[in-house]
Image 1 (cartoon, one colour):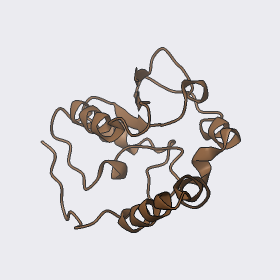
Image 2 (cartoon, helix red, strand yellow):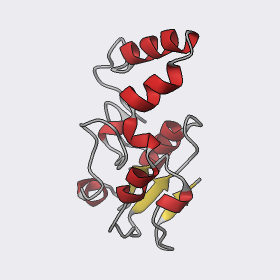
Image 3 (spheres, helix red, strand yellow):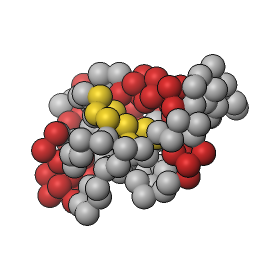
Length: 144
């Protein structure tokens, strides 16, 4: 079972979400989201380079769901399966790779420590990119 340690009262994104909500009311929410908060998500050129040169392995379980449709929930299920129900973490982003993340503190895609420590040899990789941008290998697992 997951153990959440030191849960903060507010998300690190609370201020940005409040600003975005206010800007949405005046018609500038989409601009703020794409230009200020997550500029990396809006460029197809950047998305194409995210996995450039990466070859998925049998250790990789991709949570490649449509954005805002339960991706973190899927990641938590993957982690619990990989750790046979004993996964412990402060936040899912502290244990799952997210290559196109627009901020620091996320496990890098090439970091192999998670699957080496996992009892099943699996690790979760989060992606909100379109299928065209995610490398395919029949040995890897994809949850769409």
